[in-house]
Image 1: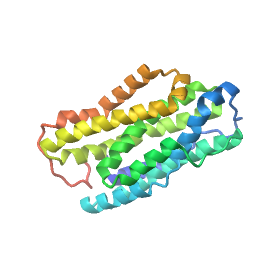
Image 2: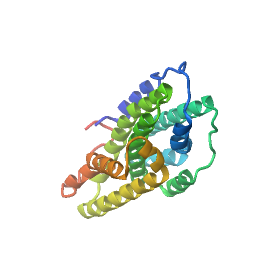
Image 3: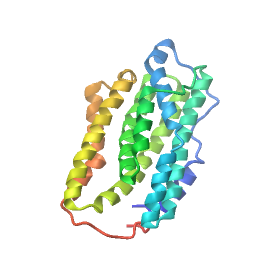
Length: 251
């Protein structure tokens, strides 16, 4: 498990890495546009969130555990997400398609985020969405032939795995500090939230997923596997004793 300062250092370095050759042409044919444009625009909008509520939650949490570097790590995590949104937006500009300012799914998700005040709720939401994002961007990459867009998707996919690790380390820490009964109840809620959100994401972007060779059965199975590798692992700790330690130090 990395310390918050180690995550800060990682994000700071990773933000400087350039993996995309912007000298390549940008284009989508009519079939690709029909399959992916709406979802591409919606996801681009979602990636550009300022993350104010998440930062506020992280500040309250960091103050509680006396770990100021956690806020700085979260701020760089958000910047990395915004980088993804900027890259997608730049691609949309290059193919002459608009960046949208409103999307029903994004609006609903933003309303839910406004209700999130705890680090636990935020971390759960981010892990869930980042898991879906891995399938989304792989589907987008597979649904198009344009090399520039493929590189943009690859760049995002490289970033997503550490994003989930960053969130899961914090999520596990929060979970471990609950009582056994609280762990049991929380785990059931996590599972309900994860798979409910999984279904909502499918309904909003099923055309793109299908174009990327992911029918509902494949998509659901992949999300189930991602759950077992992340949140699902917490079920093995439900009967473990509650641990106490200094969260600002490596474990």
